[in-house]
Image (tube, rainbow, N blue to C red; front, side, top):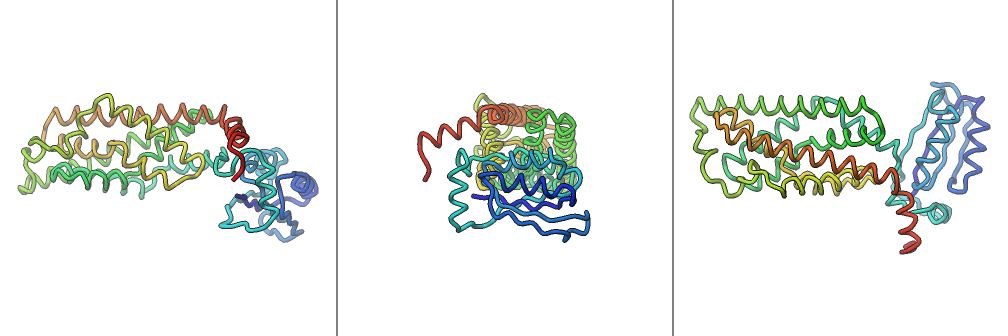
Length: 317
């Protein structure tokens, strides 16, 4: 697997950048287009690089001043069916599926900490689905609410911020997490109060035995263990860009279902539901944040050596 770099470079930097790209054993398809860049003015250089070395190349380009004075755009081709690509992948240490581009991880974390309207809307809808799941005692709706909830992006962003020492990112992530959950719970609680006023829901719908959804406000040791495992899986999937795995993370933890139960407890004045939901919510967030931070810290320290060792043990496919 290769990564494509498109660089906008001031003319005075072009010779150094070109020589740097050509001299690497893990780059190919180096292209120099002189004078074609308009804003910023300069040249355009392109190359393909083995994914395992994309982070190394990005760091060196930043040291050359390309990030400050020009532009860097990175993309992943859908396919690279040529011999040089296979040679580059074989020459670079580790397997491309295991490669971590920390600059891309940080960029994704920055996006995950943004308080967008769509983030709030998705969270409100997820908490609303969870509240309906509680009322109807529907396990299927609980799963649906878990999948819709966007909260893991903020939790992962906080973990990335801690590991990379980006404390501003940590603050923005935690603030988004707290305020967005407070807003979503308040919005659903208001809707629940309105539904109660017109007789659509009654306290007994929440307090009666709910065998399919009772677990979402009864935290135990396993709630925290599941949060740890899910947090570890989630940040690993984010770091190596295995987005399909994220769905499993979303439906493993009960943050959003606990928030839905909390909203109903507040609307109906059920203290036991409130405290149980708050405990479940806190345990899940704390577990994911702790595991995410530890896994990313371990990857930062040992992941390259581990992937190279695994390649030597198992060999290339």
